[in-house]
Length: 139
Image 1: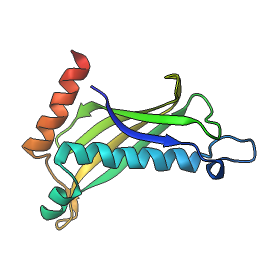
Image 2 (image 1 turned 30 degrees about the vertical axis):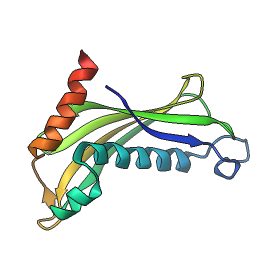
Image 3 (image 1 turned 180 degrees about the horizontal axis):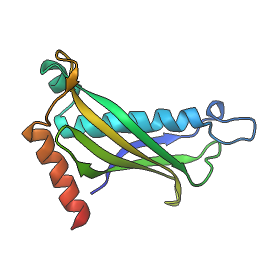
Image 4 (image 1 turned 45 degrees about the horizontal axis):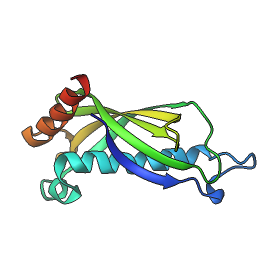
């Protein structure tokens, strides 16, 4: 199941000389969507911080499909693709008002033990929340 993780407007100052949203702002929107997504799985950054855990992105694959113009109304929806021992793979879909797909980003992120400075096994609560979303996606 996809979760809506961002609603935004492409502002004129985010656009290049051709009137299209600049690549760096796609990345910013996708990064904010990632924070919303993993935060919802674990209950927010406060829970991770208390456990000395964080997320470390190790892979991003972006595909640009249709240009975003100044003033474009945007939504990002995010869904789980794969659950690993220490990692989650998820996909963001950036769509316009008509549901037209502007861009996608596939993210692999690893749960990171901030004290030990290494990847750590996904705890049951995060794994369970991700599995629930994945099960709804394939149902």
